[in-house]
Each structure stands twice: as structure tokens, then as C-alpha cells.
Length: 88
View 1: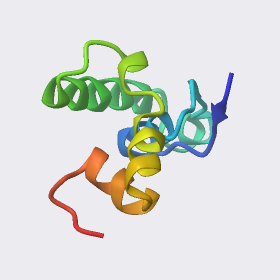
View 2: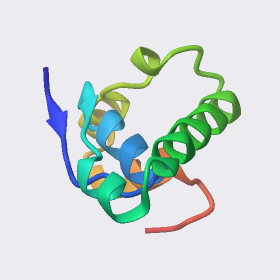
View 3: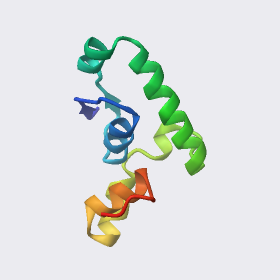
View 4: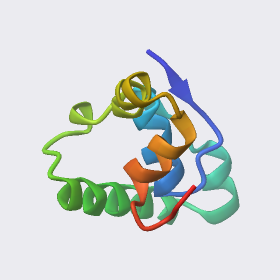
């Protein structure tokens, strides 16, 4: 299992998942913001999944790596995977 730490919001979580993490660590965020951050992460990821047509988290784990292999620029691919309205 690949663990991603230092997750402070759902965008961080989505980026880590897109890069292949299968576990998200948010202990510091919970200590700083309280347990509400977990609900925010879940809601943000759920909205992201609906917007992108993913039915499960497993459906997009590692997708940025797959796309970067074909396109060669991981940062641009990652930004487009999370938010297509931001340009790199």
C-alpha cells in the first residue's frame, strides 16, 4: 500500500490518489482543523468523482501516471486531472 501524507484538503487527496497512493493520511489536518476535515475530504472527493464520472476511488488511482507516460509532463497532466480550469 502506498501512503500519502500531509493531506490538507480534498485536492491534495485527489492528487495523491491520481499519483497512485492507495491510502491517505490526514492526521496533522485533523489536529489542526478537527474531525470536520475528514467530512470535507469525503465530500470533495465525492463531488470530484461525480464530476469526472468515477464510480469508485480505485477507478482513478494512478491515472495521472498513466496519462503522464503517454504525454510526458506529469505536472500538467496532474493539474488537468484535478482542475481543468487551471493552466500549468
